Image (cartoon, rainbow, N blue to C red; front, side, top):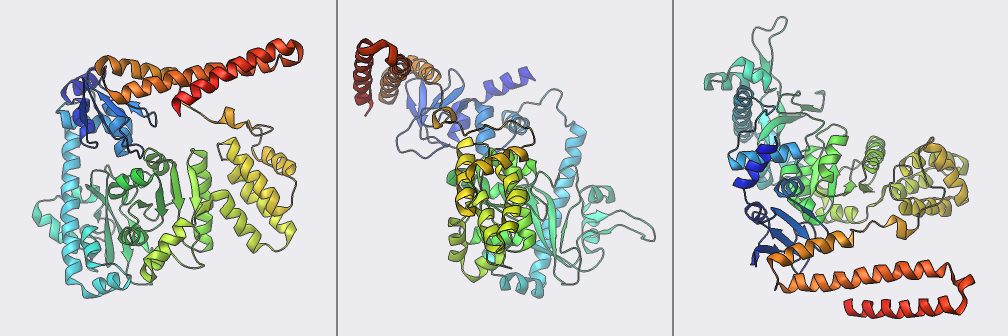
Length: 516
């Protein structure tokens, strides 16, 4: 595996890989450009072909071609390795997928693509299905862009279309398009019948499954997904992520909705950073994939008790994984698709007013439970478990204070019950100070990057400026430490210690003026 990685690096220069996402300018032996991981006006993102690495002095992003593809594409290392190996023309040694399995996957993909084309054609031929989509507010352009189709009501219309094209029964079953022969059935039959069909694509835009929405009200289930296959794992795939990932990274947050119609209309309304779970609960795998693109999410589930319960579970899971979670509040009984169909601006306004999860659920409890005792019980049983997953002690402190203020309960009691909820897990008796809570990059590490890059670009003005600023900041840090140490000696050291502190403060202030 190690030799594969080195071979890929040799064949794919880092400037070539990064240049596909960032406009790079030559700077000595290196390149520089605006960082793709945060918004900036002045380029602080440097790429070093000599070291096959990149570094941003604005946000601290760093790594090699594998890290870059992981971060920009939202892929795992294994997925990034496969992607780059494909680009480099490197056949991975000991790869999990054999040639035979790859051939089988290709057959399944071909069958799924042929099925998508069939469903699209049948939608054009079915006026009631078209009218339904248009009545929900979808434009013809949106229907075409998302390749929404229709599965006829007949039991074997897709099967009888695909078999003459050369697809075997076995391939169609493995692709999740038909059910195998069982009992009295003489031949396989279609999985999707009389349903609107939404293709589910992977991050490369290739169809791996379908989700069908029943048109008849009496048909159950309302939503039906392709069974799990060698291409499709419902606990991992997010509907729309391929189209949304660039916007999720750009806006630095994702909007999570429950259904396909919600997602498609949200994109149509101008919220392209929306993804959906396709009728299943959001899983840790879903959220970890999103976290690679942005640590911030807004949950925008249906405005009913089921949607609220789903938001509670998703909030707790997302917070436990270290994401920042807000929850959008929809009108009672409404879903995102309804909101967009009525007025797209109302949908955007709801998202703008999303609240942090703890605050959202606190407000719901206090609005619904007029009996104070019941309200406090709900806070203890529903809200504190969610709060316990908030990773930052500063944020926990903020929300504990907010709960105390809005409920009239002493903050000490909130912390006491919160410790009980943690059930023996470590939790600070008091919130950590901001100085301890704030995680900053090591200045010495950053200084080392500047020194190395200056060897390649000794006259680059941005690097020279970074070097001067870092030198001053490191001196300030050192002086701050010396001042803090001397302040403990003031009582015993008298004027001599005060004089030393005064001198150090003057030196520190002088360094600060240099970087202003």
